[in-house]
Image (tube, rainbow, N blue to C red; front, side, top):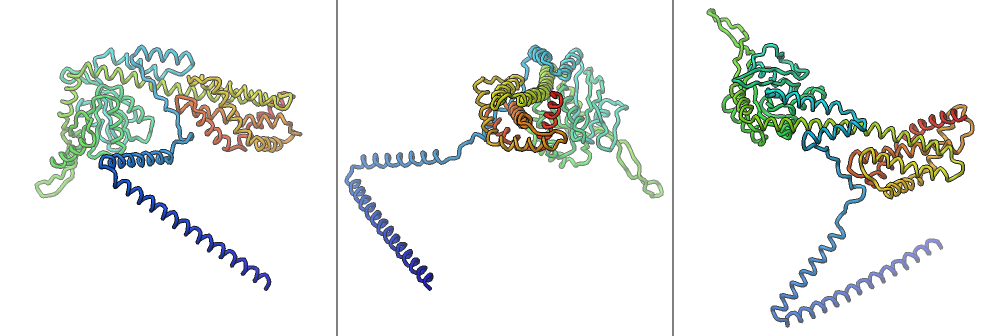
Length: 502
């Protein structure tokens, strides 16, 4: 009973205090309202006595003040880009201005140890094609669109293999012929939607080496076909779209299809409709009225396509040569860029492995606590500097020092955990005995240096500068991934080193 009375008394006091607060706030709001009302009436009375010019001036000033206040509030409250959202500028593929610049780039890359054979091959191909008067015409398009059948219809080459099954062409084939005094080489390449990506790449490269590209399709374009045509237009090569199997459509439907294709591809030079020939099934009725099914040859209709080919190879001879030469140089530059990236990846992994090994040896060789920290800081700067030099990105010593220092701060928060993990992993190896502090530090620094090296490589590969914030974000992410398996790897290396030392 006494407890209940105390609770009731406490509730009454609380309600009384709450009521007094409400009354006080109500009176305060009422006073503020009356004060603001009086001020507003006074201002209105003063404005009523002003001249029209002063009243306009006052209104404009009040409007500008309000507008400036709103702009200030918006700028303070609008979301800004955080450091983690900043991404280094993407590294562009260096395109040579002329052959001399490309040869210089090849020589420099070869001197460093880059495999330049693929890029050099494009230079050999350029020399080979430049010496001949042949005009290369590449037939490009999806599998089973009728590319091989069209070439056979134009050239009369019977050795071209055609098959109703998709993907008959497995490699690039060249078919030379002479038409109306023009020496032409027709290129039959694998279909762009082939399941083999290597064949698709071969077809794209052959299109870039040709003087003229014929894109063969059947009616409406799929999304993939449209994307391929957009990429072909970027090659700056004359492009003709050939709509094959025209016999499937009426003249009205054919006109509607051609119109839709033209609206989808405004940059295409020319569109023609063709029929590659082949066989068609017919029904014959004999004298007795019996029906028999038979196959007959379908006459090809390729005159419009052939006329366009001859017109462009004849009238645009010089410009076609220049475009082809420039395209081959660019293709070679892209292959050189790819080879350079592969070289940097290989050398980068070697550098990280080398400095990680040195850091582990330094940890085991430390004669007193703290000396290993000095060793790691020096090695860390050397490793990051070597990776920057490999990627041809200049980084000041102060930047490297700050980066390694900030990475060390990240590590300091979890060093105890890393050492504990290293100790547990080392104890799992039979016959090791007592785990020394140097061994546990060696495993920990192996994890740290590998993570830092991979983070720096990842940042340098995606941009043209060494962004510290990006490196640290990648470092934090890498340090958290698959720690136990990686720790076992470095524990084995540490154990091997201890055995060699003993």
